[in-house]
Length: 452
Image (tube, rainbow, N blue to C red; front, side, top):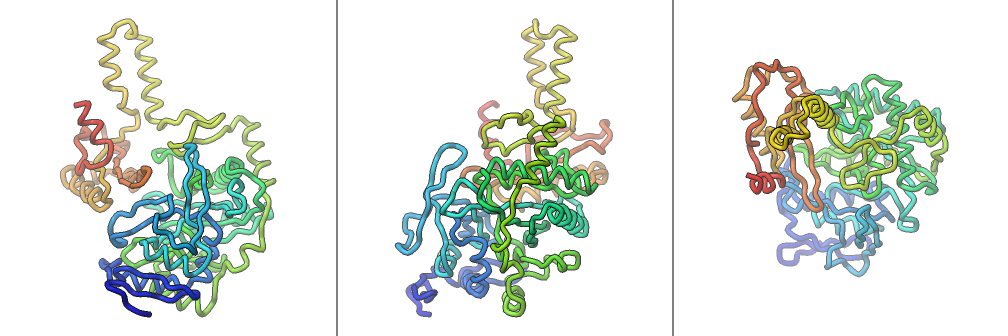
């Protein structure tokens, strides 16, 4: 290892990788870690970390200002890509294309970590076949207030069903509050078919387990959400051994199934995982040997459709799918239906002034949701929520954990956070009106100011 200006030069796999600003703080609120510490972590677990990303296009999620600042997503390969790094042309649902980075070895891994990529976000495809995923991803996303024991119980229910269908499942902690379950599959099905299989799986688990839900809209969810849309084209989740931006530098940890019901996600961090890997290796080392088929899940999907259970909502940036229900929040749909019914009963369609009044209230949902805060800084939005609770202590005392909805909104190259409160448990007489969000620096602000 040599130094060059404010950089360290590491020899990795026979090549030299320049690590810029190696002493830059990346974690300071809990553990104390510099950028170079994270590079050394990934090199220590490289044989296993590469298993989830090698030969796959990868979205660069870059924490350029450390793990405690907002990251940004970069789909296109940087212009200063080394000549030994390769790319592949990927097409998106929008019709656009981009050259995305492909990591083939530990040298490439160290190079993208230097860019701030501590979460690794590969697509579920290999470069030899960009249209047919070789992985089904089951993302267990617990809603607010859901206990870790419930997440684990749902994971075991998923395993039981996959066992029945002859599919081998590989669990890992998400590195946050959830569990990811990956299934290697033969690359024979399109993204649409893999998503259809994932939706059938989610609905089957929902029927078998009262703690599970397949509902897309947050206001309808409870318990643990099985996010079937993670299998839609252009969606990615963090792969095994990724580092999550939590104060303890927690890692998305591959597990054996006999560890699931006893593990604590907090045990797996940048400081502890290298020793675990050195002692027991990678629990998912044989994953590629068990590529399964989706026939049984697709048969379940066909039965659902025959019973009148059609498609479920897609992510907002996708074209509306055939058979997909209206892509609108259920509360807004009910409000719109009620408005139209009132218009018809009162003859308001013939009165432009009355119609204008009606349209003014179109966004008033029957599910009493109000926006509290929105910001590109999650902690700032959360601070706004706490200020709102202090201003409305009587109302705050009546809220259930899942009445607070923290929406992570993703744009083309940025993320922002919106916090809403569902006042369903608050008597109408004391429900506060929706005011100006505090803070209010989300991208919808400009549109509201223009209307004002």
